[in-house]
Length: 313
Image (cartoon, rainbow, N blue to C red):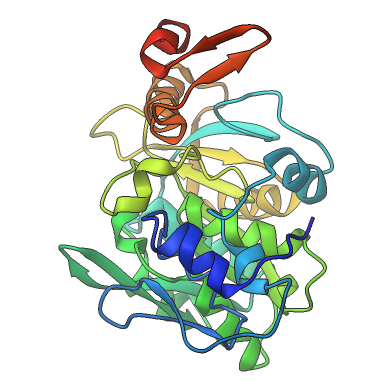
């Protein structure tokens, strides 16, 4: 699906409207867009003659046809509204001195799924700003493994663009759900970008917050990833996390990590109630923000958001 809109529309509808999430999707492959080196926010470099702009069509906040993207990425649409499409959900812990995410990166390199990885280098905590780093081996990746979702708060998808320009292939990325929404849109589009060189997408399930655009997001589990890493719902203080495995590639990486004893499954069928409670509370809150106070019309009936709220509880 392509929309006949350009960078000027992106500027008006997303950036000036406070929806920009600083993900870097718009400027990863478009020469007419860039990002502020202090804040990470996108901006238009020059006027573009394209009527069907890659930047507008890549942005996760311009439009987001979730079911269409799922069908193209996974060959099916979700059954579980909160979690998205998945093959399995397991609870794991690290069996080494390294954390779970690093062990997934190590397994991805060793299994041949990736040859390079896009990770984040935080520059500021208030406001949260991070910039992409492309590493070529697991050893170099260790110092850039995020400890929280806000460590990823920046234009990380531009790292995919940089890796492509450097003629790299089989590129992995650890990113937040919003980043992978943009990357997912690019991957299922018919724009010629080089994004298809991405071979593994790991999502850090998001706790939301930190930037203005966060309050408009409804994806907290990383629905367009191959593997989602979620500490939310796992026993607090245990060092354990849930892995939501969505694809065969994701399964291959997790299987390698377990075979090599980097990770241990502590529960093959974990209780998902706390994770889903967290995800749904955030989704519900932000869905209300998206709806605003506009009237909702159903047949003859018109309601404002306050009158409608009991149906959202």
